[in-house]
Every structure is written in C-alpha cells, then in structure tokens.
Image 1: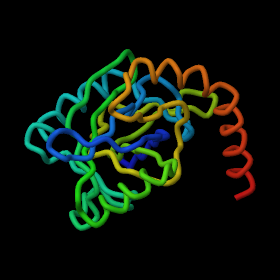
Image 2 (image 1 turned 120 degrees about the horizontal axis):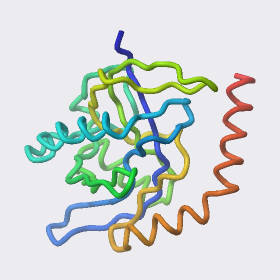
Image 3 (image 1 turned 90 degrees about the vertical axis):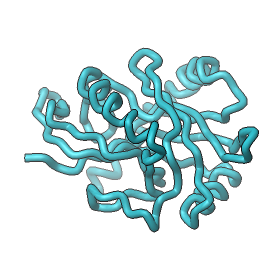
Image 4 (image 1 turned 60 degrees about the vertical axis):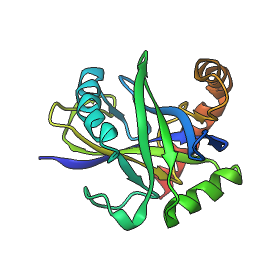
Length: 197
C-alpha cells in the first residue's frame, strides 16, 4: 500500500535575481542512499528514475511546489510558491535550481529568505517502505515523486541550498565541514523531542 512520504533537507539561502528579474536559489533537493531523520533510505536508482520522469514537468514549467506541506498528494495552485527550473546529480546529491514565484505564497517565501529564516525544502511522494533493521526503512520501487515544497521543519540534516552567486561545489564542501557536531546535536534533540512528544 502506498503512503504519502515526505523528506526534508535544510535550506539556507540568500535571494539572487537573474537577468530577467526572476528570483532564484540553488542547492541540494534530496540525497540518495542516506538515512534521513524519518529513518528512510531512498535508493539512488529509484530517485534517478523519478527525477527522469520529473524532468518532463520541468521542461513544461509545471514543476510546482507549495509553501508548507499539505496532507495530500495534490498540488494546490493557490498555495504554489515556486517552480523547479533544473535538476542534476552531484554524486548522491540531487541539486536543483528553484525559481521563487510572485504568488502570495511565493512572496511570503521570498520575504522569509530575505530575512535569513532557515527553512527546509522537502520532497513529497507516494510509495511504500520495507524495514531494513536498526529502525531503518527502504523506500520501494513503487515510489512516485510528486514535488518539492518549502517547509519550516527539516527532517534531514546536512543538505543546504545556497545563493546562486556562489559555487555549489565550494558550498557543499563547506557545509560538510560545518555540519558535523551541529548535525549530531540536531539529531539528538529530534530524538529527545520525539520520545517526549
């Protein structure tokens, strides 16, 4: 049975406008083969297949996402805040360029980013999982990627989106150095909160 699967990566970015005045940000959308805070692992071959299908939506300018996750597999147009412009792989990291739209939700997102508010970018999809042991779950072949949304509560550490005017490779190297102890502390806090809540 397919369930709604949501995975979030931290997003840290400053706004950049391209020559056409579009607001863009670039960074890691998702990581393959790594356990996230929800205990799920996405095999790279499953994500690669879904990204290949998703590229059709990108070409048609229909790769829309919302501000906050709904509890639904439907993208609600009145809440759309952004459009994915391109995606590519860097090792196991899926990196993408996101255009922030001038919609009501997009304008809120833009102002949050201008205020240096730390957000998450989060995949939404349908699929099933299989236990791997050690409380890990592997996402199965029936996974279907729906979109990426911007959210307030990140579940996966170590993946930051960066300003467009910096080299993504340089930023990814920098985040790997910085994340270490911070991400471990974040993991412990989430575990404590989950046990209490």
